[in-house]
Length: 87
Image (cartoon, rainbow, N blue to C red; front, side):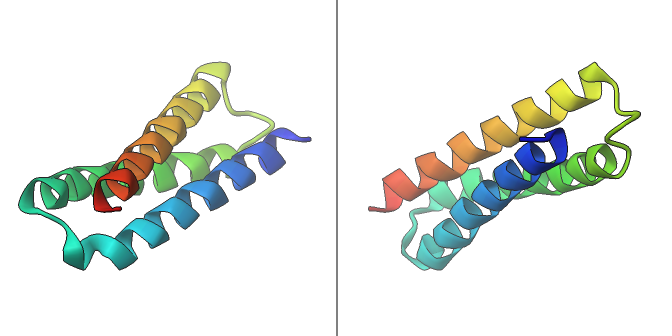
């Protein structure tokens, strides 16, 4: 699997978790809403970073790739955490 495919797959998974969590937000307590707001800021940064890495995949530094990967994994975990709290 190519680097672009891996990042696209991660981005799709994060988007799926984000969309599912958003649907359940109306049931959330206030502390979960605050966590959501923080994750949304991270989501915006992630989308910018992942777009840069995908656009410049051949020239992206290892550090940029690792940063995008770490941010994506952290976001995925954060959205999973919110989903768990809402069940």
